Image (cartoon, rainbow, N blue to C red; front, side, top):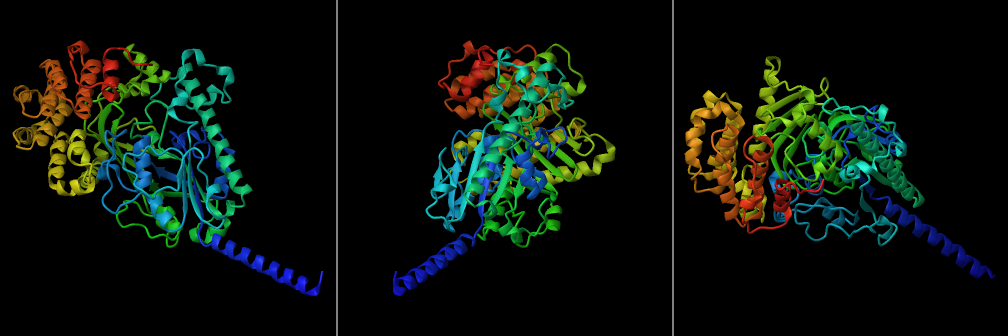
Length: 621
């Protein structure tokens, strides 16, 4: 080789090295992000968060090289609502996405997008594998790829930064939908005698088997986390990438998924900090963070770490990144939660946790937690728990799930982690109760909370632009909140205002007046004559609520009103709401067995069919 050619190859090699270095520099300009999301599990089933939880060495390795968040929360205890909150960084009741699952998807306000859109606009390759389950219209430009084959490995070039979300279903509720014939104690990795049974569950062999089986599912989740981390390492990307592991909401033993207790909302969260981007965080690896973070904050955090401006309309704020100190995070001590409709089951509840105290506002307190949801009761543990209640074999704590709820509950999570001792009536906590109640009232009014309209009303009038609809009706929503909150007063002090609301020209004030009366139950028997008059109200749903109250106090058979209103409607959202009352009076009140042969409905399938199948005794279990 001549000297000239040798010089050419040397210069060429130097150029290639320089070019490669430039590409590496570009790749290092922005961090990558991977979200590993396990379905339906609260923090209580992992040893990293609870000594009684399952070992998870791969998740624990993430923690050694990152941060453990002791107080991370989903804002909703069910998939579609929680995942929509994650994607939008917005509270569901503000944007009409609070119902699982939607009759109609809500549109985001003009110009508002799901957070991966902003990453994509900043040059990120965004992928989702594969679950979405949104209650909102996704819009264009959110994902470069979303499928079971989506991966960061398909990005257009090695120096393209990426955001990848990967969901894993091994811990999903359906993993506990086994039959009696499928029970196999010998196959368990977890010894059923070592699991810690919650005091609200009966300690039976079936419950111990169910707990142990779920611990085994968490081991599978851990194996999957290890697989994703190995892929990043193989690609030489691990120290370029923030890895978030978390559950998509709580679950999934009975009284968790679908409920605003800690087991329904308090999720595991571990964030592995890559060495190259440690300076963005400024918190030592291995730290356990005490501050409160929730799903509205997750997308904002990723944008902030990526150097992308966080949109002003987001409800959340970053909990990692430049300008966010450990002290700042640890000062955060509150989170809100919401529960509305879960498939065919309606039960409007809101929660607020501030520090050690948890407040739950049950707006339809006459509904027990155990109100039928067909999917829940496929689980043998649910079925056994209900049968033991009917057989009188449960203690007072275990019976709570099957009895009417208090209109408001206050728990001290530090001394009562299972939330079984309601402190709302304890004079020692009167000040705390009042503060929490006022915060809740302020929050639902100022969202404003769209659930104070029946869902059918939102579907008809509000989902094209729920935020604008809420703003236009904020004063009306505030009045509806005030009517609902009459149930917080002693009945003698609330009676006059209830009677005034019953005469209101606003049909939804009349609607909420009868819900409040049902919360009072027999204490409101003086209003039975007014309720009988309301059976002729011009609004069918007011008639239904008045009939529901009359059934609760044992004054009048509600079924004629339920049959008539169901046969008259062609709206599936209206029918589902009425059938919720039908199931309640059939299952939980004496003397009102529902006769589905009296129905000649125009509607078939969907949630209507689920309710009818239960009422006819033919749902699958």
